[in-house]
Figure 1 (tube, rainbow, N blue to C red):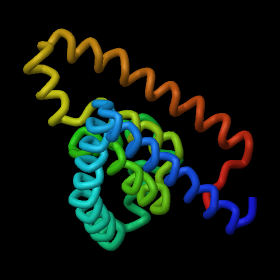
Figure 2: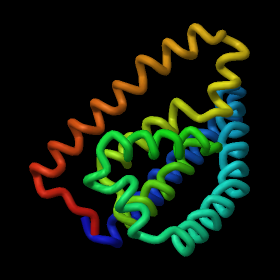
Figure 3: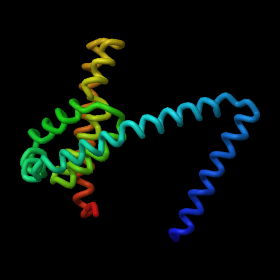
Length: 173
């Protein structure tokens, strides 16, 4: 698909969505109103949150030497590197889309692909603010059981993905 065709396609998709929401609002469909409210809240959250993420990434990129990342969470870091990356993910806060720029910065600095996948998995399930919230509503037993199940799953998936990506000469440009 040519670049001009891609732009036209995207505009058509946006137009269809806008028209669908307008028709649904005119006909009194409550899901359209709910969708509009959720969309506005999501956009507002992104506008407020993403600049902070990019400032943090810029500071980490400047202050964090590549050699430190490579030695602690690089290709040869082993279990120690996985533990470091899990701790880093647990200390983070914010929505999942905030993890991807951090993961990209860690990759650029020399982290192993395995630890990138572990970071994203741990970020999505093991953040301390989320664990405390979960514990207060569902209890320690549930939280520990869920953590004991999800953490090994993410680690195994990360090792499998690393194996297949290295086997196929994966690279990021």
